[in-house]
Length: 112
Length: 114
Image (cartoon, rainbow over all chains, first blue to last red; front, side, top):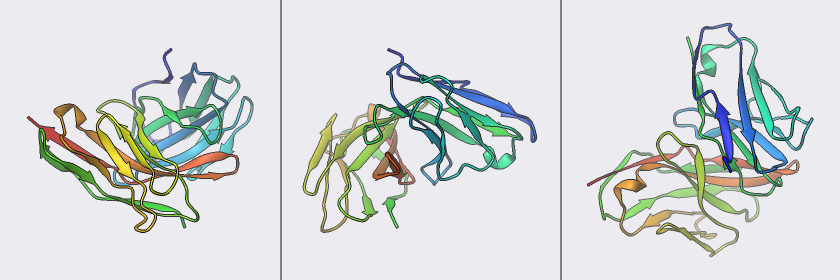
């Protein structure tokens, strides 16, 4: 049981480049979440999904897109990266909406 | 609105010292309260939780009591170890729109030295 995994672990982008972060969970969870973690600000929710084929905006969705084509995967895309998107990105999942969320190890993204 | 305030770090302690990390919250009603821990290079893990007033959550020697009268959920441990070095987050789950929106504090970094 791997839990929640994230790919890649580290990435450096130039301004304007695009990339996709992959989150995978093997716990058959319905709900999945993408957060960003910035110094002194805790974690903030970017987008979330309540099931396969669904997505919804969180607290800070601008500049990001997501897709949930398969129940076990939740992709976060940056179409045109900006330095303000330099952050650590965490994926999480939960079985139900009111359940404990389980977090992945994170992706450290630097945009130059 | 709903918010969580944690004491700023870093907190530096010697092994076997007593630990307190303060957390206060603002919320409507009586939500659950969580403490998450993030070890170096890892994601967040749920450390403990309390679901109602006067509940005490405990795990791995850590404890926190949900105090309604002071809107607090301070994390304590009687004797810290080097392996407790991590970042600790207090979190408030607000159930809205069909899921738990987690409102996190800024995090408190703990460094324990031998």
